[in-house]
Length: 355
Image 1 (spheres, helix red, strand yellow):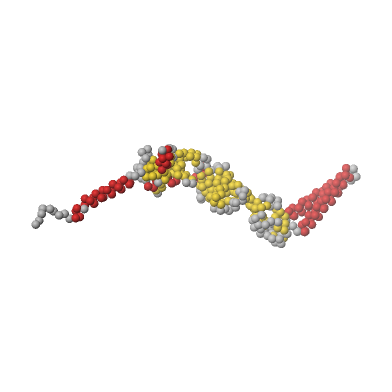
Image 2 (cartoon, helix red, strand yellow; image 1 turned 60 degrees about the horizontal axis):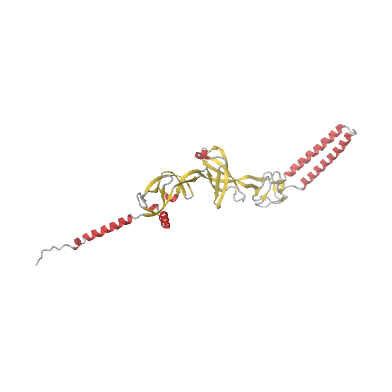
C-alpha cells in the first residue's frame, strides 16, 4: 500500500546543512580578518643629518723615499734592522774606507797649518815687518786649504748615508761587504705619522667639497677602528675619462696602524642640516617605489608613497610624502594593507601602566 509522502534523496536533504556550515565559516574568517593588527609605531621628527660622500681611497705615506747609494764603494757597516724607526740624520750605512778617512785627516791638518801661518803673518804685518802682499798670499793659501777640506768632507759624506727625515725603514737590501754603485737601493723609508689618503669623487659632488671638511676612513684590517682626518686638497683637473676629481685628505696615524698602499673606505661629511629621518625597517621597497603606513586618527593606516634620500646605519631620509608629527608603523608593516585597523604596542603598554 502506497502513501502520499515523497521520499527525497539523502544528498538533497544535506544541502541546507552544508550551506549553513559554509556561512558560519565565512563569518569566522571575516571576524579574524577584521581583528586589529598589533604593530609598533613612531612619530616622525626632524633630526640633525649630515650628508656623506662615499668613496674608496688609497693610503700614501706623508713622505716616502728609496734610500740609495751615491758612489761606488763597499759597505763597511749597516746601522739598522728591518722595520726600524729612525730620526732625521741617523746614520744608516757607512761606506767610508780608510783612504777617505786618511784624506780627511790630511786635509784638516793642512788647513790648520795654513791657518796658523796666516795668524803669525797677520801679527808681523801689523808691526810692518812683512809686506802686505805676503799676507795676501798666505790668506789665499789658507782659503785654498779650507776649500780642499770642505771638498773632502763632502766626498766623505756621500759615503755616510743618513736618514733624510723621521720614519720607518723597510727591508734592508745590503749587507757589510756589499759593493754598491750610484742608485743601489739601501732600503725604503716612509714617514707614516700622517697618512695622505687619495680618492676619486664624481664631478657632480665638486661643489660640495671644501678643504677642512671632516673625513672618516675605515680599513678591513681594522674593522672596529675609525680613522678621522680632514680634506686638504682638491685636484685642479677633472679626469675627462671617468669624470671624477682626485681629492686628498690627511689622516693622523699616531699608532702607525695604516700603511702606504692600503685600500680604505672613505666618508666625507658635509655641514649638518635638519631632515625627516625614519628607521629603514619602516620603509617597504617595491621595485623603484617605496611606501610606509601612516596611522590615521581612527587607528587605521593608509599607505603613503615616499621619496627617499640619503641613508645611514639603520636610518633613511624622507624627502617627500611625510611631515613632522606624522605617526608611522615601524614594526609589523608587512601584514598591513591600506585601511587596516591596528593596535599600537607602545600605546597599549602606556595605557596599562597608567591604569
